[in-house]
Structures are given as C-alpha cells and as structure tokens.
Length: 201
Image 1 (cartoon, rainbow, N blue to C red):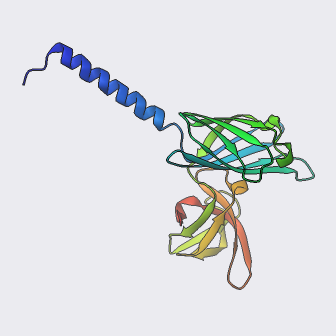
Image 2 (image 1 turned 60 degrees about the vertical axis):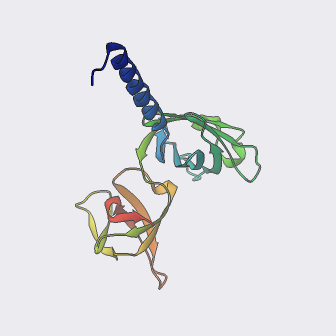
Image 3 (image 1 turned 90 degrees about the horizontal axis):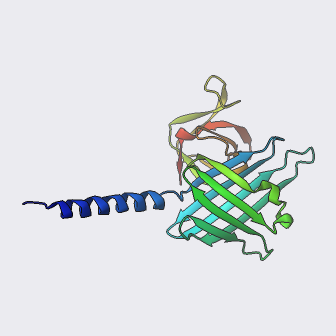
C-alpha cells in the first residue's frame, strides 16, 4: 500500500491532536495537594475524581497556639480542567479548582464560616495519590515508627488485614502516614506507617 504525502500529514496531525487531548485529560487527577506558607500554615486538599464528578476534602492548619483550623467538604463537576465545589450544608462557601500538571490552583470564596479565608488560596503541589479513607494492611506484619524514618521502628505493629483510617490532616508525603489505630479491646497505638504496607479498601 502506498501512502501519499497528503495522507501522511493527516496521520501526523491526527496523532498530535490525540496526544494533546490525552495529555489535557490526564491533568485533573485524584490525589492530595498541599501548600505551606512562610509562617508554617498549611492547606491540604484531597481530590477524588470519578468521571466528571469531583469531590474534595480540605484541611487548613493555621499554625497558631490555639490550634485553629479550617475544614470543608464539597462536590462539583469537572469542566475541562476546572471545577467549582459547593458544600451540601448551604453555607455559601465556594472553592474553585484549576488543575495543572502536578499542581492545583485554588480560590476560596465566602468560606470564613469554615475558617478558610482567602489567605489559603493559591497554588498547591500534588504530594501523593493517597486520599483519606479506610485502608487494609497488606503485609504479614507491619511496624509503627516513631518518625518517618526506616531506622526508627517501634515494637508495636499491625497484622495483615487489620483496617486503619487515614485522615486528611495526617497526609504529608508519598511514603509515610501518621495513624491512630484502636484495636478491638480499645487500646490505641499511634505512629508513622509506611504507605507501601497499605491497600485502599
């Protein structure tokens, strides 16, 4: 079969359009994004994308002696690479998201009731694919650590199929998570845990 020059140009153009379209659709991703300002305040947003539906949890740590923080949960519809989230409680808070490769531009509007002033708006960087929820231990024996360091292992551990909850305020890296685990007898064990030892339920 002979391919004429005109046909070759059309094939190349279609390939480029497919590549560009594929890349643009992959920018909006499930995961957790975070930023820290110069005073130590942090804003963390965990995003779940299913089709065009976007849901998110927000946790903002003010880094003040009072322990003040802000929280928000909301949903929206993905349009291109952007979405506007509203909460079901009708407070009027709106969170605008604009996805970029590995980043997320965020703007908070009328969210003071949630302790989320516009100071927390800005660009957040994706830190992990992990989002809050229930996870299952997949290793036969997985240890707690006193810090996110493989050399700081504690004596306490969890067994395969134990279930743990990951909270948004404890997500800070792609390798470690801080968890509080309460066993059936009511005893709570806290410490850092390796994310590679957990599977999403």
